[in-house]
Image 1 (tube, rainbow, N blue to C red):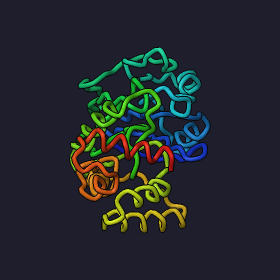
Image 2 (tube, one colour):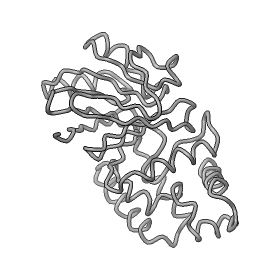
Image 3 (cartoon, one colour):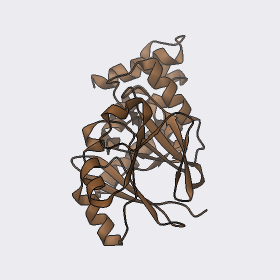
Image 4 (cartoon, one colour):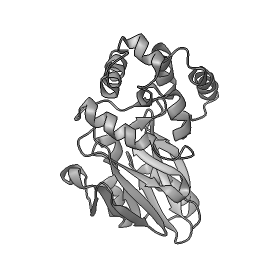
Length: 256
């Protein structure tokens, strides 16, 4: 099977919307369409016909374009079963462990609550692509608006177990701010220091820092590294369990 074509669209202040095309069938999806106009413009530019919307969660900057795009194109809206009442225009409900056929591609669905109670992620294994909404960010993770630290750590644990080459298509360009915080938590991490410099250089040139990879995140994202002796020492949690360490990192980021 041919790999998915992914087009990254910066919208609003710092959101990313993704157009995803499956070459064998021509199926075209949009992941978390915050707004309509940039999506329609990118489709017209490529002469693509939208067939699907893939939603990860209900927040307005992820579903704001759902109903208008459905009206304009007749596309099928796919979203989380646990949050169906908050996904505008939902046609297909999916949940943990489900597989969803997108043209000739197959997405495995992960239930990853924490940021919201119904959040899901889509993993296209054959394309090394993860669309994770606001659960995992480059060098960060989502705020716990509707979930607990235990839920979020469980969700992140599942994501970090994916293959290292998996590209992390998260929904926001938060990496530079995340890096500044991460360096206060694990300043001795060489991979983090080098990545932070690369992030600064990319942003100075107006380049995106997304997608990253699971491998990069496991080496440098403090939210995925509660086992780190340096992090535990700096937090004064040498003998705590991983959830407690994660919770304290998240608390500090909330107040950073």
